[in-house]
Image 1 (cartoon, protein in one colour):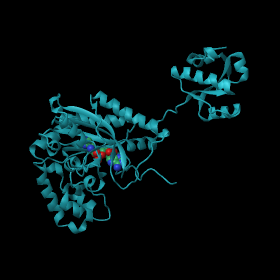
Image 2 (cartoon, protein in one colour):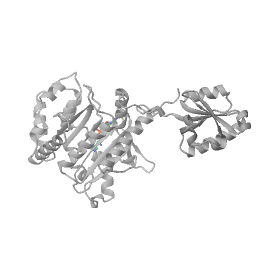
Image 3 (tube, helix red, strand yellow):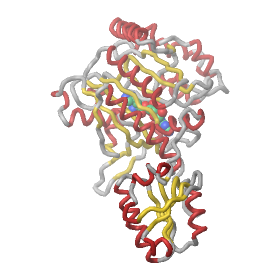
Image 4 (spheres, protein in one colour):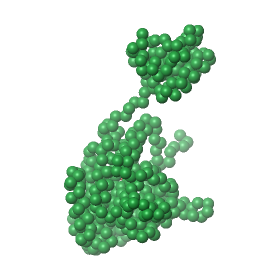
Length: 425
Ligand code: HAM
């Protein structure tokens, strides 16, 4: 093979498309029920938007962005995530003048130069959703319930819904101090990445996955963000939990949950498949009350999530929880000779206008060869026209299920010929 799809990307082949369409339809449906409106933004943005928005100390910005200079010398970056673009669009289009919160959603590809592995791609697709302009925990509850329902109607019923509160710019410094103090004495026991995180982005210490150093033990014993919340964050947290209980949402409070992007404040959440040990989230999100200011607006609160479509499709395939309709062909047109082909091309055209799924058998094959072709694509009926049929101005219609065959006048062949086939003598 001379060319393959670039590493970490995949072709979504026709047999996978029904899964994709089902997941995308679930996303569109759930967004509509909660009154979120669709938005599309460009596939690339000014690099600076992500530096400021996602944060310079994050893996995404440090290691994963597809950044390039265009011919005019501007630095652009392929979208690694959706939230920064949506906030940029909110500011650019003066959406603060609309009724708040502004509820938006998107289904779009994202690009990250990651080490490809199962469920981790360099181009993936996200269903993302943002509510901008409301600081109340009632919106957090709405979004978390929506996320839960989305996964449920898409067909993921067994999931672990984890939440945490990581404080805001007032109280987080207190927590970071406590965390640094806790790690300080045992820094030589943790992995190299954690030493780096200690210096650059301490909150991410809690996200280390290495098991060959003492990192896991350190995380298990480290202080918890929720014990350091200021009164505002604490009230937000408690009200959110009350709402979630009221909605009967099954959540796990996970003090290790900190997320990989810098913009989060207060509520963060992630959903993982139920199989233990799974490190690939099906969905992740949280509140980002400081992001708008970071990218040059007045302060506007926001909350949202992103969910990888590849990962949901993969779950559905693994769990066989969603059975794909085998898209059957209503009829295959079988034709022997040029004159017959002139008839079937017209009949096919008319039947398609009526909405039937029609395929014309490949030209130049024998009757048997064309029949075999019809079987191979699971046709429900075949329509056969050869010289005999032309002489009588008829077409033979054969039910491929039970083998019954009946003649129809070529001029009368229509959708009802198939729907009434069994009752016609
Ligand atoms: P994220 O956690 O980086 O958050 O990504 C959201 C989801 O996208 C993940 O939970 C996962 O399902 C999927 N995903 C991420 N990276 C990959 C990958 N390399 N391959 C396959 N799937 C992947 C965000 O992007 C935030 N913008 C979410 C958000 C919206 N927060 C607030 N609003």
